[in-house]
View 1 (tube, rainbow, N blue to C red):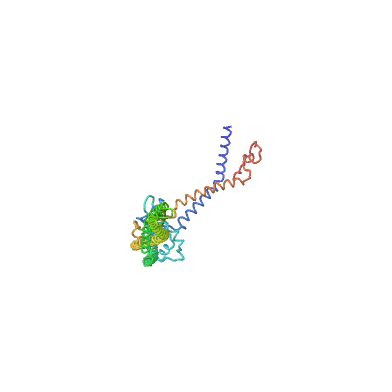
View 2 (cartoon, helix red, strand yellow):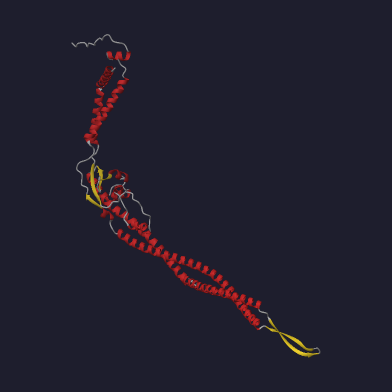
Length: 441
């Protein structure tokens, strides 16, 4: 089987080579025509294209690496306004074909706008970053070597101006925005300070209410001390009254005395008993002391009742004053904190505006981008590459010729050899009669 497969491969390969040999004139003709056409176009038709090149050095670029961002503060929110816009090398490269920049180049060189459209200029100009460096190559292709050099130089010069103007415009907008913010903050700061002054000038200012609260607390403390003393006095008087009542219960209110006398009567001497009743002075004294104690106790109880009401009233009043003091203190602290923040913001905006104006005065284009190698007038064209064009035409034409040879062979049904008879008819041939051309006399 292996030998049969090898034989089939050998037969097929010979057949393919035979087809190519048979139609070699077609392949050769197409190749010759294509190479000739490419040569004519390259040498006589296509105009030579020259390339002028400018090299720029970028001094300041930003990194595109992502880092952890801290929570934004007032300074971090305002500080970007005073900084130069961060630009990468790819940003500079993209600006090379900016339509506005190319329009300036066209106007500077006095080129015809109808011939040199922005799209055509963009196709002429290309820019790329030199690997592992801060260099940018700007290339311009044109059929006129002098114009190619002029366009390259003009593009590089206008790029520096364009970058400076773009950044100045952005910084000018930043200054305008900061000025508006400064005016708003200044007005709000004045309003806040006026509110603080008005609060301090009110009849019931924080200090006034605080003094009233201190006075109420002092009175409350005094009344509480007095109530403790009055309660103690009441306790003593009640104990004294109880003792006096006990004494009165044991002492009779009156004292009865009996006087015995003797008189002569019919039956002799008779005894006469005379009884007299008088107020007990001890009872009277204790009663008097009891009445005094009751009167004094009533006075103390009235005083205690008054003190209880005053303590309750002063307690409620102290709580109200404490709430009022807290409210006014919170309001004053909020206003003071707001004024401090506004003052800090005002100072920060003022410093940021000054920094932004300083940065605005810097020519960023000339500072951060330098022309290290200006364009020179090219002497050797880069297009067309005649040898390469003819080689490519030869390869393509040979491929087309080979493909066409197999197509022609596929549609060729004529019988010219014994092999064609066996191939198309499936009939073995026993022999062949050669064709003999007649001799010429």
